[in-house]
Each structure stands twice: as structure tokens, then as C-alpha cells.
Image 1: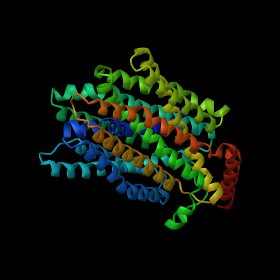
Image 2: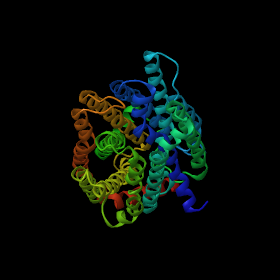
Image 3: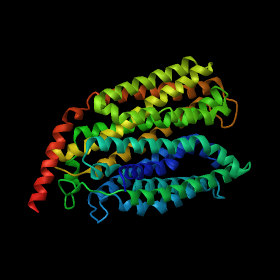
Image 4: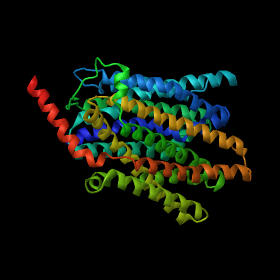
Length: 445
């Protein structure tokens, strides 16, 4: 298989993840409140509470990956293991049982937890294997960008066709429409994970094995740069959830432009495509830190343009395009940092903890999603939000805070963390040292 076959085979793994992940970020809150039949506060609380379970599943999965040694590699086997459960639990999460309110809430908790666990099984290995696919830094950047483009494609699919599919399959019955649509997404994701398994090959071994190490020793392998990466994931995915979730409320209630939702989704997502395509070339010329600062400024500028020009079509569209460039710049750079952070643990601590790093990333990602969903639910409740009704001025102002001003605060926090990222200057030295260790290992065999 050629280079692009491997790149696309790896990248579409995130397309499969995002068919469901983006739906959870953008539609699950609305589904729970307006279709499933639980309150915004209950839905937000559930999404927060379930993240404590994710803390154990993510960490456990990371430790399992670090200790896996098969002919297929460390991460690839789990694309097969997690594919079918991912499809099954997607179906169950969007199935509405004929229970009372208490029973339905329990059902929501259980099925959502199971879906998050299945997501962990396939997504953590997807995060860990880039340093194992190649040691070439530019090729890694291309792999990450390909993955981001595919992730964006998955999000674009969700934002552009989910509502039409729900209407088509439901025929006026939203519950039926969501169930069939998500079943289609789950089956498609399952098939994609099989393709990712067949298209990738782990050819770069770690310089040290964690097979017999203790959990305490694994934790010692985490560096300060790893914790910066974890927090970047928390704040980035908080930003992502705020934008993806509240854009629906903002355009539906504040701007009264429900018919724009598909267009808004397409513009906000596809506008990031140029940034993702350019990132590998830009990363040859500029540091990841500089590119992150630039992307943050882009997002804030676009956000403020939407606020100032909310009554002008041109300003709204331009703002969506600019925020799309900014948010996908932040997205791509955050994930491009991960292979460097994994290598830094091997370089600095002589520890191969790719799985543990990916596990903490997953936990902070889900933690960011859960905490943000909880905050959004609390804001909507305190603002007096009532589903499918004309909103009060207070409710509208609270929706505006969620959509406009919380993202600005999150961007500032991301910028503050990025200031302390220092691996751009160490990349060349790390590569030389790790290659030398692998050559010594090969000579010693």
C-alpha cells in the first residue's frame, strides 16, 4: 500500500469516531432535552458524572495499550476489538425505552457510559500509534493533518446531513429519525475501523518496554509537557463543545434563523479545511507555539465579528469562516504536539507511556466535554430556558454568553498554556537521540 493509502487509512479512523463523537457534541444535549425527554440540568449533570467512570476506563485502556505486544502491534488490535461494540452502543444510546422518567434517566446513564467506553477502546489506540507508524517528523505532521481533515469530514457530515436524515427517516417522528440515523452512523464507523486496521502497520518500536513496569513507574514517565498537552485538550474540547452545541441554540433562538443550521454547520467546519491542509507546510517554517497563538487570535476575531455583526448576514458568515479557521488550527496543532510529547517521555524519562498519555488525553477531552455540557445545562436552566418555546430576554442573554464569551475565555486559557510549551526547540535533538537508542538496540540483538 502506498503512502497515501496508509495516510488515508489511518486518518479515516477519526472520521469513524467523529460520526458519533460530533453527534454527541452537537446533538446529544438537544436529543436528550427535546426528544428523549429529560431536563437540560439532568442531561448536563449526567454528562459530567459519567466522566468519572471515563477516568478509570481511559487510564485502564492506556495501560493496556502500553502493555500490548502482538504481531499486529500495540494499538491496531483494538480497532477490531472495539468496532462492533461501538456500533451497538451507538444504537442503544439513541434508543428510547418505554420507561418512566426515572427509568429513562438510568437508561441514558448506562448507554452513554457504554458508548463512551467503546469510543475509548478505538480512540486511544488511534492517538498512540503515530510515533509507531513512522519516525519521520514531516510524515507524522502529514498523518496528523490527514486525520484532522478526516475528522473534519466526519463533523461536516454530522452537521450537514443529520437533521435532513432525521426528518427523512423519521417522517415526523424525531425519535425514530434519530435512532435510524445513528444506527447508520454506527455501522459506517464499524466498517471504517476495519479499514483503519487493514491500512496501518506499526513499524517503529519504542526504545523501552513498559510490560513489567508498575502504575507508579508509568506515572513517573509523564513530563510537565504532557500535563500541558492534557490541559490543552481539556480547554480545546471545551471550546469545541461550547461552539458546536450552543450554535444551534444561538441561531435557533437568538437569531431566529433555524433554516440556516445546515449552512452554519457546513461553513463553520469546511472553512477549517485550508488551515488543516496548510499545517504540514506551515509547521516546517514556524513553531507549533507560534501557529497556536495565531489560530487563537483568528478564533477570537471571528467570534467578535459574529457578535458585532449579528444582524448582518455578511458579518455572520465571515465570522463563521474565521472561527472555523481558528478552531481547526487549534485542533490540528494540539494533536500535532502529541507525538512530540510521547517522544519527550522516552527522551527525558526513558519511559514508553504512549498509551498512558493518550489515556489522559482522552480523560481530559471527555472531562472537558462533560464539564462544558454541565455548565451549558446549568446556564440554560438558570436563564430560564424552555425547550421549543419563545425564550425570555434573560434566557437569550445566557445563550449568548455560552456562544460568544465562554469561548473567548477558553481561548485565553489555551494561549496561557501554550506559552509554556517548549518542545519545538528540542525536536531535532530528541529525534537524533531516540534513533541512536534504536540503533543500539538493533545492534544488541
